[in-house]
Length: 600
Picture 1: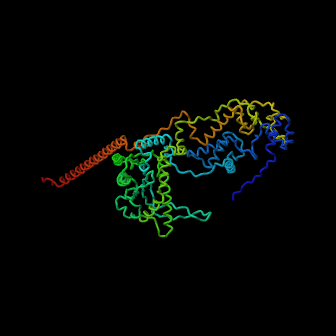
Picture 2: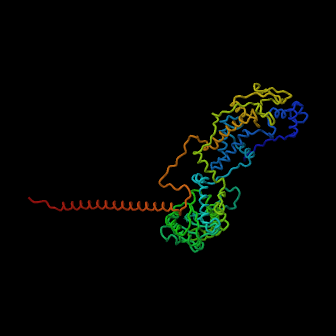
């Protein structure tokens, strides 16, 4: 069992107002420290520490934090910033890097081996209740990089222009979104009630892992089209095992060798489902992702012919910009898992296979693709009502680390920092004395442990005329602050403390946000272009430019196929010639052997 260390808390035995009055009396010269302490019933050491600046008037009870408050605040801000950028730190990483920071700044702490432990982490959470441990969602590197503000703003600019020109801003019935998702017969079991403390709770699933692709299409009014199901197979016989009668009404079935969409299936879906169910009103707009099966030349030409604008989303941004991904497919997956779990619980002989899958799919389809879910997806993606500000600011943050190579943050290294000359007279208490060198004995305890070479003259009756020593060495000033020998509360000369704060921030940034500390002279990393590089932004697929591009690609593909066929024919001809030569030599050998030798 974990042992919790109990600490005794000291109760405050004086009023804070009495302490303020005592300090005011000493500073005005009316009383000495001893007389003020006796008169206001406040400990003499407390009054003396506040007057000389050794302690701040607002400091609470208990021990001081192991790290300076400003440094701790900077660490907390950097940790929260890192989590928003998708590069958050685990608890162990936080403790390790804090220890490295302590060593680098040469701060004296009670940490073992200069590395904080679990107790410091618990205290840090108490001082900063907004800190906690969270499990991050998996987000691919491409999604982090591509979901940036510039690309999304360009997409919304063109989308708004299309909706305005086509007069579709107030016609949600004509704004469509299409996407596909995959489902397997082996579902994810739902959470169940179990005994507390149980390590393993089994959940029965089907051993078959057959994959089925589901194509859905919805509009901003909340309507949905009939689904298209693509199963794995090479012939139509692969569909025969499915109980197609139990699927939703109007469901279309197709097959493909790998069970995914291809150009043929995409063209068939557009002609036999979309054009038949979208209505006769024109124009209409279809928003989809940039999958190759959605960009076939036949589909684009059919869209132009039918006055349907086809717009592809920026790549790797569908988790924020596609309505089906945002609010529909998530609930659909949960409903499918729930339906499978309930079905398997009914009978031990039940299993999810080709015959039972359509029924389970039908149940999940009707439960998840509701009018409210669909409309909330278009609203969350800023499509209808048209609102580019619907995308939250946190969506763009993970893309920032990839941009630091282009524009670096100018930070100051601690070994090269130049602090302005700062005097201790510029640092004192909350009035005119902002901070002071504080190796001053309280008067109540022994003074044998005090370094007398650093003691300031202690005058019983301290007045405002106390002269403060100058500290001209900025590095020495920094060391005194880090060693808690000078308490910085505020500053009349802000340059010195601001420079120290900048130094701390630079060191914290270099440890907790290392990707942002890039040299200004470093050139941006160049992405190597490949022959099969995908497009890096949204595209209006029904534009003349894209059509010409597709025609050119189709022509090149045809030429490539013709050349490949021609090479095969030439190769076959060469093989035939070789065979003919072998046969010819063989026949010659037979003829020569058949000739009889002449008799003499």
